[in-house]
Length: 391
Image 1 (tube, rainbow, N blue to C red):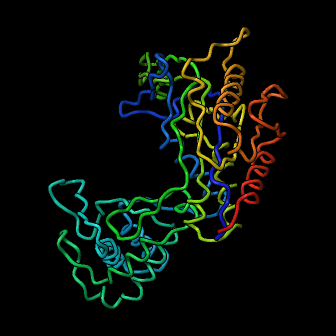
Image 2: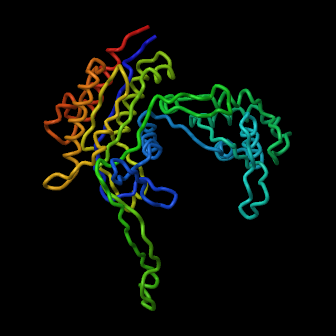
Image 3: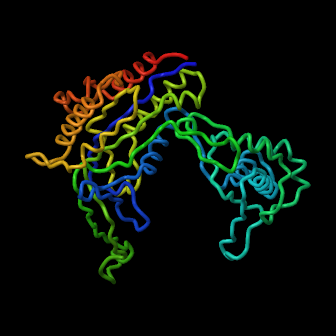
């Protein structure tokens, strides 16, 4: 079996202007206390979702995470295959009710005490290739006659006329997105997929303050008629700015296990992920902040021993340079820490190490300088897939 080099670590330094990329349940900027100072934080879930969107565009595949898989089947049958709406709704409900995943009925928005017939919500979110919706619709089409004579789904105890084993076969299906990011679905046997990617929470390399931005909105009618003064709406929102350290690692052997012996697909998925991780940005508040920067620095290291985060480089918060700014000292700190860490571990586990960014030189601890992110990625993947062994 083909076995590539074990890990590809990717480290990013990126300056983000005034923004709120990731909010908590009170709409506040997410933070973390690290090195006894407050840092701005973006959760791994938030940035991973942004990465997944770019990744899906690059590989031309998509995955669907939802409790409403039945409603998606209903929509496809009614809108694309011209099924009568009542029959399409019954088919969608029977699809969602067919597997071993427990389900409930959606509540009537006008009367929350009442359930809605044929509006089935699975208790666990399924995570399937986008193409699974069409596969389930095909199954419903095959059983259309049985569905026409079936009862509506009105309560969680109702049984589906669709074969559970075939529905669950579809729920077990996977594509490149699921093979890379993994899937947790304990309710269906053998549906779980161990993810090949680990993503850290992004945090600023320095202490940050959260700022309150007061805003008001003008009522256009009032402003035109001039019969009232003041704003039509007032409020405030939290924002921050800073230079972030971001880190992720790909376990190439886990990915190879998920996809089988297919070096071309392994290269495609790994290339797409590294590009997506570099270029993605969470989209919260994008219309009011447009914080569309690119990384100041990307560093990639191919290792055979273990993943290695450099987050500890910033446990002591970086001080701004004499001219102001945290980007340059953050890049220098990362390089110096990488050199020290690799001296402690030894370099036998490193197959290649390189970087690309706004600096022309001076980051020797990060390996070979590349002129672009593309050449940096290509060198890392080529080394990883040609230096590995076979077993």
